[in-house]
Image 1 (cartoon, rainbow, N blue to C red):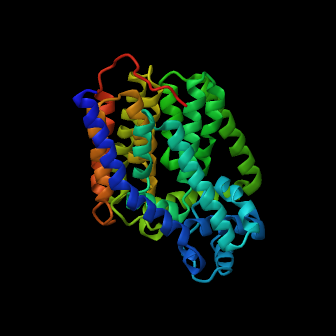
Image 2: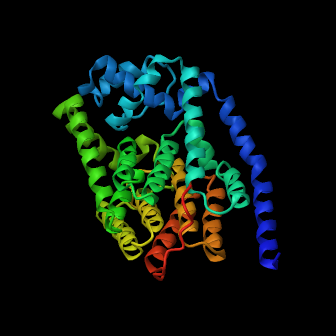
Image 3: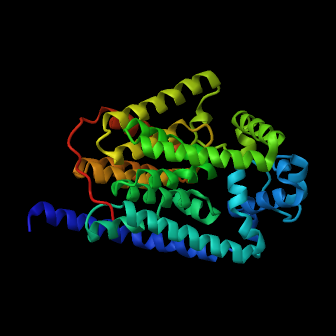
Length: 376
C-alpha cells in the first residue's frame, strides 16, 4: 500500500469519525420533532396550502383572506403570504388525510429515503469513500434545518440522482422527465435542464420542456387565469418584501443589493457563466448538472439556508467528473463554509463567496477527457 493510499484511508476514517456523532444527533432531533413544534415547520405550511385549495377553491390558492381562514385551523402556525407553487400544493393533497404527527412522520421517512437515494446514486468512489461521505451530509446546521422543517429539497436531490442515473444509461428522455420536480420549487435548480441543453442533451431538454408545459397547462386549468395572475403578483411582491417571507438572512444574494437592476445583472451574469461552463465541458454531464445547480443557487432571487442542501449533489458530481486531491480540497472549503454558517446574519456570505468562486472555477477549468465514475 502506497503512502498516498494510507493517507487517503486515514483521512476517510477521520472524516467518518468526526461526522458520525453530529449526524446521529441530527437524526435524533428530527425523530423527536412532534406535537406543537410542527406548527413551525414547512411541512405544515405545505399541507395548509393544499387544504386552502381544497376548501376554498384552487383559483383562491393565493387569496390572502382564504389563506387566513385556512391558517386558523392550526392556531400558532407561522404566517406569511403563500408563495408555494400550485404543483407543490397538489402534491401534498394525500397528506391532508393524515394527522399532523402521522403525516410528518411519513413525510420525514420519505425525505430520509430520498436523501439516501441521492447519496447512493451520486456519491463517488469505493465503499470506504462513500461510507465516509454519508454522515457528512447530516452535520451542517442548514441540512439539519431543512430536514427538520420538512423541506422539499431532499425530494429534488433524489430526482437529480435518478436523472444522472438514467442519463448515464443513455435514457435522455426519461432523465428529462425526472427533472419535473423543478415544478415543486423552481428557483433552486431551474438552470439544470438549460445547462444540460447547453451540454448537448437536446432529447433530455425536450422531454423536460414537454412535461413542464403539460404541468403548466394542468395548473392553469386548475387555478384559472385569475389564480395564475395572483401567483405572478405574489412572486413579484416576494422579491421586494423579503422580510415578510423570512428571507432576512445573508444566504440570498438579493439580501445584499438594494438596486434591483444591479441584482438582475449579477443574476443574469451568473446564469450565463453556468451555461458557459456546461457548454465548455459538454463531454461531462456531471459538470453541466453541477454548474446548473450552483448557478441556480447563486442567481436565485429567493433563497433560505436549507436550499444549500443541493450543494451536496453538486459536490458529489464534481468529484465524479474531476476526481483528485485538489477537487476534494476545494469542496472541503465549501463544506467548511456550511459548518460556519450557523449565524443567519453573516454566515451566508461565506457560502455565497464559495459558490461564486466555484462557478468561476467551473467555467475556467481546462477541458479534458471525461474521468467519470460509473453511475450505480
